[in-house]
Length: 242
Ligand SMILES: N[C@@H]1[C@@H](O)[C@H](O)[C@@H](COP(=O)(O)O)O[C@@H]1O
Image 1 (cartoon, rainbow, N blue to C red):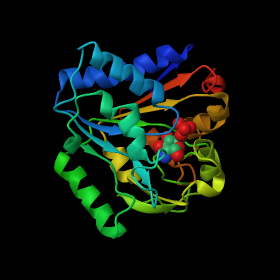
Image 2: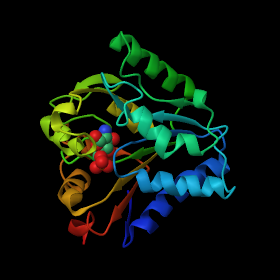
Image 3: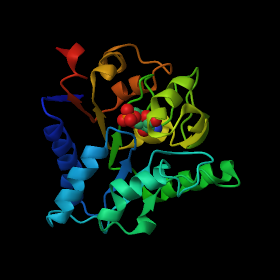
């Protein structure tokens, strides 16, 4: 594991964006695994800046998002489709047909999970998977559980996860209770994993996940088994590593 701590948010965002755009510069057909939530916003902003300066092109890249809410229209401002469009996709030259996000409104959820896994398989290995971290140790929407699922699947979101994401909605009642997520097996198959964690409220969980027991009760702890894990932390999240 390669763990780096940053004393400024800007440096953290630029460093994460630099890792991603550096990969795309050397490997234009890179397959990127992308995340949502508050954490990657500054990273996407820095990637857009690099693109606008002509330093990188995404026209041959392919992207796969980790997850999407179930039952939220794609056009809803808090759907992950809207998030990705607004934070990244509409500002860069990635062809829409090469940007994949699970369809949380599919009539047949099982078929949708299979379709997404087939697309992932056809694309080959994900070159770099960007990850944030949930307060309960979730990655993507893989919540703590007795068993974890390898491929794309439907999850019931835990109350804590819904509460954490309520800040993006008008109230907790509006936060969907289900989501589709890429499975742990797919995440762990990525060549490189870039885990980004920010804020004092994540200091304990990131420390537990990366130094504590490997357990399905903390899905991020499985990242300890990955041969190429890069962890970027801000000073607050890194507090317990000193
Ligand atoms: N499904 C997403 C995850 O992909 C994200 O990494 C995590 C942390 O989010 P944030 O960065 O907003 O703290 O929770 C969300 O619910």
